[in-house]
Image (cartoon, rainbow, N blue to C red; front, side):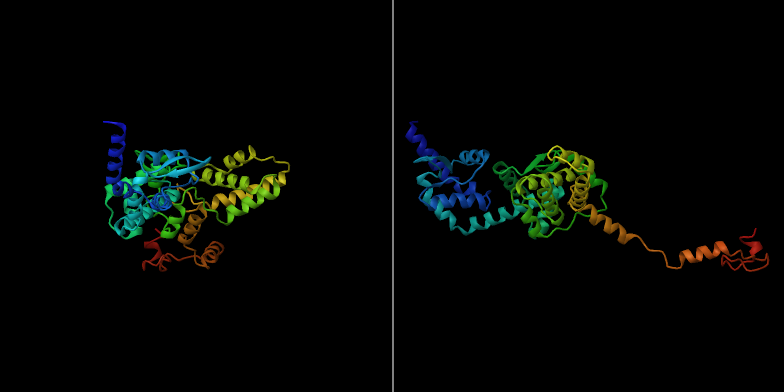
Length: 335
C-alpha cells in the first residue's frame, strides 16, 4: 500500500471511530476537539501537559505543531466537518455530560476518602447520580480519563487519590472504623473537589497561609504550597512533630515565640483537615460526635454520693433492707 493510500485509509478508519472515541471523553476534551474544528482545524495550543499531548496524538484526532513560530493544535482537515456535526449530536452531548459527572464525582470521592474499591465507587456514584451504572462503561470512562489527566492510582486495592502512597493502609483504617459511615458530602462538594489539583482551603488553612506570609520571608504562593503539604501530611497519618519538622526544613525559625504560635496554627489546620483514615471526617468533627454520645450524670449524683459517704446510718437487723428488696436486712444484705 502506498503512503497516500495508507493515509486515506487511516483517515477513513479514524472517522469511523470518531463517535466511539468521543463516547468516553468528558467535556474538557470534547470541547477542545470541537473548538479546534470550529476554528478551521487549528488554533493556538492551550497549556497542556506532555502526557496530555501524547494522549491526544494516540487518538489520531488532535496533533500539535508550530505555525509561524506559534505552538498550535490541529485536527485532520478531512474530519473538521464531522467533528462540528458531532457537536450538535444530542446523544453524544448527553454521553459527554454523563462522563463529566462520573469523572468529577469519582475524583471528588477519592480526594476526600483516599482509597475505595471499584464496587464502592460504583455504588457511591450511583447514589449521587440517582442512576444505575453500566460498570464496564463506567470503568472504561474512568480509566481513559486517568490516561489523559492522572489524578488517581489504580491497583489491587482499588482506586486511590494520586497522593495516596499506601492504599492498603487507607483501606485498613477504613475497616477499623467499620461502624463509622463515610462523611456525607453533597454532590456539589464532590464535583468541586473533582477538579484537577483541587485543594480544600478552609478557614484554618488560610490562617496558616496568612501566618506564614506575615512571619517569614515567603510570598503567598510559597506559603500556599507549604500549607497544602501540611494537609497531605495530615492525610497520610503524619503527626504534629512530623509536620513541624517538614516546615523547619523550609522556614528559618528565629524566635521560640514564633515557633509556638506556628504550632498552634498547624494543630488547628490538622484538626480541621478532612482525613482519608477518618473516612472524610476531621478529627474535630469526630471529637464532637463522641461528646454527644457521652451521657451526662444527673446533677445530684455526686451530692448523693457524698452524703452517703458522710452519713453513717445504722440499719437494724430486723429493719427493711435499704437495697429495696423488701426483705429484712438480716435476710438480705446483712447476711
